Length: 112
Image (cartoon, rainbow, N blue to C red; front, top):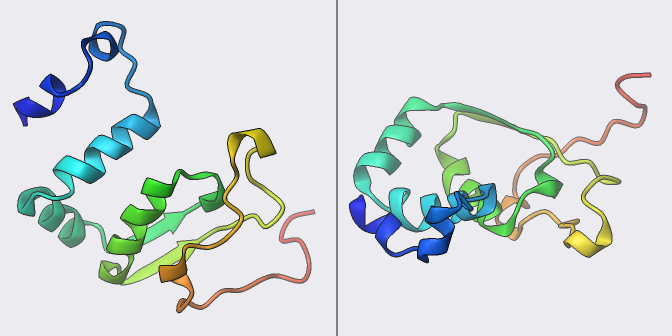
């Protein structure tokens, strides 16, 4: 994948400015689309624990929406009162593709 880094603005590479959201965006748009990467990850990882999903970026939700049917089991943890502060743009709604999955809301806190 030598072309990936070449397509980035030079200042990002010069100053190591590949934050997590940009790394995930690059993964989603390039590596995930290759049969080798997609096939390896969907065969290798059969269970998922996804915590603080309300704090993830939209491309993270897109990735998991596409990958979720390939898992044998998944635990998606969403803190209804959590998320980043308003100015960071919290996601307080489950992605539409996940509405068919079972959810559980404990009536009492799990830990006290």
